[in-house]
Length: 155
Ligand SMILES: [Ca+2]
Image 1 (cartoon, helix red, strand yellow):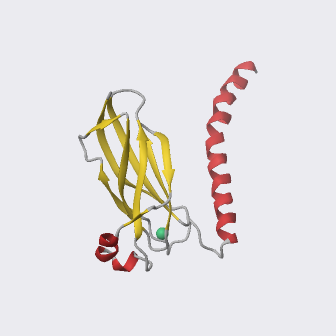
Image 2: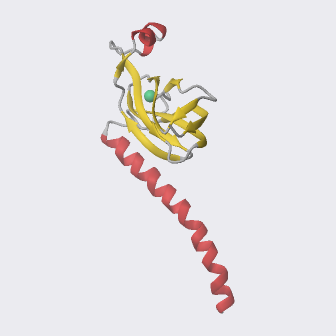
């Protein structure tokens, strides 16, 4: 009996992530329902897109240095997130006017030019690091808009 109990343990552990995923899906569906059937599950919603202008791949960066670029969405950008080596280190809203981006993508400009973002990055140890920048739209749909390998230098 003890043996079968031990066998059951990993199975119940394995089930937990699935249950969590279902709950998250229900929570998202409920949240979507509150905003009139929209949300991350809305098939009409487009993923955001964008670009990381700096740093460029292979760049040497200081222990604390800015990253910047732009992002667009069919409905609007809620958040830009920067991850270093898989850990969220900063996030924020669009904060820079980019009329050049409005001109290049008129369908997505929403009658303003605030499509640019600038966020500080921090690197706790010198050496190679991987930066991932994500754009999140107003419905919560998220896309990686840049994956950049850099080297931080201690100066
Ligand atoms: Ca969207």
